Length: 378
Image 1 (cartoon, rainbow, N blue to C red):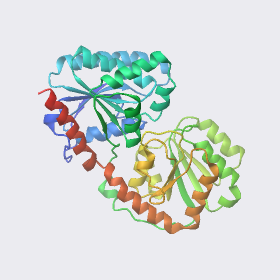
Image 2: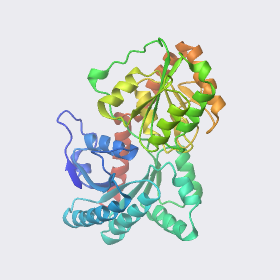
Image 3: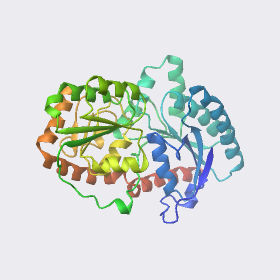
Image 4: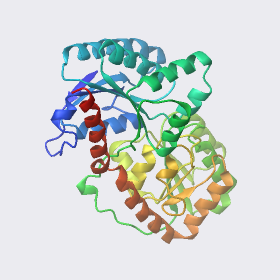
């Protein structure tokens, strides 16, 4: 689909009409989204005076269905560039693997077919391993796109360093993910004390990469210590049957509750009733779920992968444990149980730190990026 939407009437249009009309974004579905990039793009759509967007990917029942969908959208991408003379920048919201190859086609078309400036905005948590483990031919394709894009945007200084060390980019910028502002009806947040069991929340893809089974192993191994003192709620999609089978096999029903896929009001409810957010991932870009949890003044337990350590400050608004270290996960959970005041203290710190990822901080920087590129083509 192609969308050119206007923000709500009460939106401040942090990217004004004069700039927004010159930018075409391509990326996953940002309306019925299920991933972090779509969520970020959804925030963009709310703060651009007009948001011109081509959807290059959407969830499908079978992977082969992505081929005809992309071909159809590619045709619309070409039509948009052909007919809309205002567009001077193409902003590719990208990830790794299949996303890379879709964006490669769009990049070649926009830059060499239509002479547009192209931003390659990398969100993919696995892009580092994707590049380093690729065969020589694939590496050449990756280098071609990254080194010929007019600008590469990384989510954190970790990713800035990765691109600087492995590629010779034309221009490299850091721009953190942006989160939805909390509705006025949801604020101010009460920094509530912990009463009863520690309510811990995990939201993300159910699988090895996000560390959910390490977390379940931790709960199982220390079941006696956690009984009556902890309740873990898990929301997400992926290997959900394996998750539920694990809970049943080890009789963890009193400690772990699977909530299914959550979004909207259900996500708001879970974040509101939780005390601690946990995401023991093996790789990340800059996890949007962590930023959202911080926006609800939750302390975080995570791992120092990707840009996570730039949002979670060890001992300030949470704890960082080595990926796969179940004993450290246990120790950090136990500390929050033993020191409930720490939940309030670190939660307040999360609320302060997350301000740098709010629209009022991110969009002036994005606007500056666009303005600097538009000057070159004036």
